[in-house]
Length: 441
Image 1 (cartoon, helix red, strand yellow):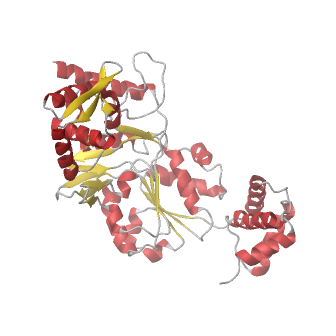
Image 2: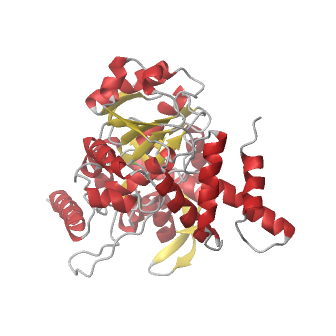
């Protein structure tokens, strides 16, 4: 009966948390060890390793360290003290104690470290992670033209690009952004994630069949504040501390991408698995930049994506040989300076239905770019600078790029500082910058 009450409380808390905030998923605080989906022995092992790595620590600090409520860990601490694995060192506030390992506890902790050296927030079961992705997947709400325009506010682009990008995002499939380098393909791809909605929750780590997979990655996951609510029936801060609230991720990789990055990577020394890139980008955006310039053949890389793009799920192999099925729920973007038709065959192009060309800026857009960049960098307004550059492109038979105003003005800024001159955009400064920037190597 008590178990049923706990289960009902957890479900209602999670549902109420999502209703009182904009989140489509809310990890409710666990009320018992059984609700965590973890075994007693696993949590005890994590406690032993945590005390071994931190030294003397209070029970409440320990529970915070491993992300489990004190009411869940306190009975385990009492049991471990009875079995002489840990010992009281001194009292702590709020009816708590400081703990340290006994000699037997140090031996057990060392053995646990050899089996798996992971120390940190307790993992969540794989099934819980799958449910969270399905609840938070992008594309629950279609992106509107206003939302897309707002996401691209800080960058320059061709206006008709919106009518191509919007449907591509709402399709939640995949798209190619192609065109000449320096026109903002990568920047556009990064901005698109802002259209996907609210922040999401991810677990620090996942456990399945004894395999621990570390998901949280500081390189791609930016923490987001937990929303507060004035409701008395639910304190918004009561959530499962094994989960982290982050901004929707944008995972970007370029020429360094290899096939190992797309599979579960196992470290035999620590016995910890690292989640693949597509798993880290779930509910966000995965950008393959400079596609076609990786160390692996484009055909090999694209063959890896055919099944996920078709079925919206991916299959991964764990170190034990077990295969698991995971949601493949992200906006997959291939950014390339090459023609997609020259890189892949028709079968794959069919599975990436949107091929969007990002062209060069026109004269009016270039003038606005020069004006915006010069203002941001502190230069006085100099309309003739854009006219000088447009004439330069015509005379030299060059194509303007959106990155040119920024790159050229940075050179002029560096020159003025070197000569201790006031910031200004003079013809001779532009000529010097062009000679340096556009020199044929």
